[in-house]
Amino acid sequence: MHSSRGPRADPALIVVGGAMAVFVVVALVWWLSDTPLGVDSAVYRAGGFAVVHGESLYSPLRALPEWAPELPFTYPPFAALLFTSLTALPAQLSWGLLALAAAPSLYVALRPFAQRAHLPLLLLGAFALQPVWQTVGLGQVNLVLMAAVVADMVLLRDSRYRGIVIGLVAAVKLIPLIFLVHLLVVRRTADAVRGLAAFLCATTFAMVVLPADSARYWTSAIFNDHFAEMKGWVGNQSWQGFVARTVPEGRTATVVIVAFGALCAAAAMWLVHRLHREGDDRAALLVTAGCSLLLSPISWTHHWVWVVPALGLLVARGGHRTALVVAVLFTGWTVAVVPNGGGAERDWNGVEAVIGNAYLIAALVAGLVLLFKCITTYTAWRRKRSQLLGNAEEKILDVGSQ
Image (cartoon, rainbow, N blue to C red; front, side, top):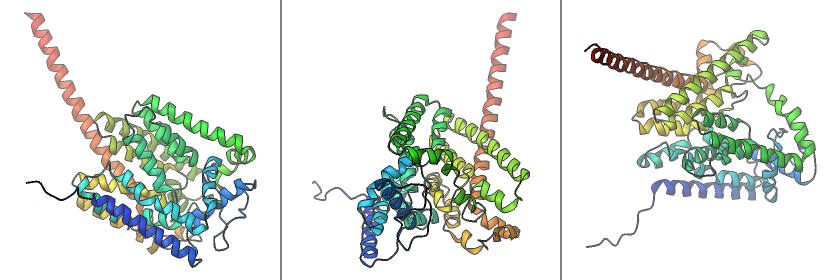
């Protein structure tokens, strides 16, 4: 007897659809009530307007809504060309367009790292994490960029076009360039070359269309002086942010930043190489993502969206308690409870320093645990290999002596 029931709907896709419906309603209500919504998406939209009207992209943006702070456009010119699509909508609906992509992006980024049975709960829980809800609230592109990287690195692994998506998103925001290095480390050289070619093509196209803005970006705006002044704020969870909060400015701070950067990059590349050799490409990808967050001069709390696939992988491997602790850590309370702003971070006591640098510390601890595990495995493999070679040499000598 055949069942009359049709195919069951995927609970994870129901969560995705539900989240998208909520964001549509929020965008419409906020638009109709003329309520401020989406600070960063408003900046993206204003950058698109600057392109459309032939205004300077890296000067004060004239198309910002009255309620938005006077933030500068800090992305490469190619990103501004893409953001011209937002100019057809009011600011709140521009936010809604980016918010609509949040849940599908989470699904794409999480699916390769998590077991299917865990996906619905993980997707729901992700919206309680500060990097996610802050990305959605600000109208940021972090989730879209992460999903694009995961799609290229994992889902398109057997495609002839792999690497291209990473190059394109790197032309939108430079940090994903580190994943081209990742491709080289895991010996996907052709993919890295395609990615670099895509990045150069997109950047060159922007130079042709926006020559003055491109010249200004690559000579001065890239250094991001506006946010450099806020480097020591608790919201910046990069290594440079940590140094700015704890070490006086000058040569010592520079040495600490450079030395850590070199050590972190070397350790990350070795880890990626070993994890790839062991067939653990998912953990290797997370190592590179963590390295990018640590080494970037600015890693705002909403940049830490890579915690979502990391939690998916932890749960998939049975680390439920650890995943719960990490999830609670990334809900945003650590940033809220410590004194911050106006240089208050420099006066933290020991407990406040640990709490205020929690995201950074969590990444460092995870990296050290992985490093210890890989070193132990590698050492055991070398010891076993030496024993096998020694036994083989003894057998050869025995045969030769007979």
